[in-house]
Image (cartoon, rainbow, N blue to C red; front, side, top):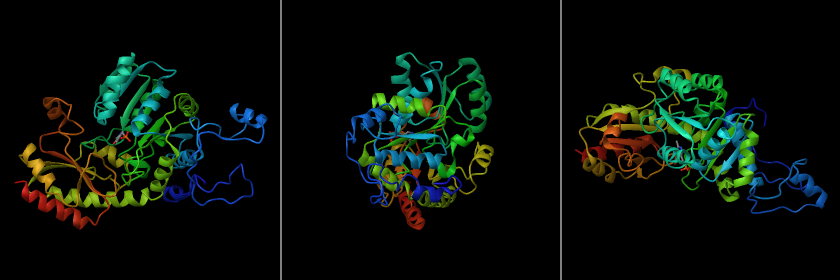
Length: 403
Ligand SMILES: *Cc1c(COP(=O)(O)O)cnc(C)c1O
């Protein structure tokens, strides 16, 4: 696919419909098949020798690569505008592998945003740090604090999310990328909440962009996967780690992920439109004391949002506080929902609701949680692609029961 095509076009064309090198002149399937093969056969041992020596393109062993996953990787490279991608067995595997790739030849110090996906925090504090890597956290929306911490701690990698969970904070990614470049730190961006429809971090100066494909990209709640898309400097090191330790996604999952991604721009637009309507409606409801949404002109990061995100595309997540509510009222509200699904994921076609206190922020001490702005009545909603009237009607009747 040519680079100048629009994202919507690339999403349905990139990666697919390539002639099979082993069968020149043969039929070309319009959709990349599931290649369930652990190894590959060659016409001659000399050819296998060239493929293993990477003098000739080709597949030899599924830990190195697989044609179905290659198709997904090409698709993601086109969507994120990178030099190459790796499909991983989960979003967390993508974050971890990206971190390894960033630190291989850099200082073993990480500076991470203090608002990160829960498992990313656990990975840093329970796995990465015990291996002797220094880990520090910073308020990623405070550019001066980020500058200070980069100077003080000299990180080899900086890890941030485009849009944080669950309070939807947005850091100044392009300026942070400049600071990282000056300090030779790799900037790793988790772009799961934004998707390439809202932001392409590599174009803003990030070095590695990771996704949980499980969420909006695959979108149907039926596959666990992740991806890393790298700039030119990191493509080979990511691939070399992958060939050695095998974090790659299997061909069945790659097929499902790719099938989902073809419609992700369409779904994401609708997620965003529905979420805008739901956020505006919630803000007027007497049982709701606070709504966090990126369209809010009083959002603490409004300037960054205006500068970095396209107008009208503000994501699917709406976080709100149920007025004077504790566990009991929130449970009542959640148990009364009929359309919105109580699930610990997000990014599915259906709306989902999550209670951070018992899920993503369960292990955070209550005092710290309060300091972060996550209260006992805070609820995270991921607005799906249903008819928005039905979502609002469902929320309305559930809010009535929770008073
Ligand atoms: C879900 C999620 C992950 C982890 O992805 P898995 O596919 O569950 O491993 C990482 N980052 C963010 C922002 C997520 O929402």
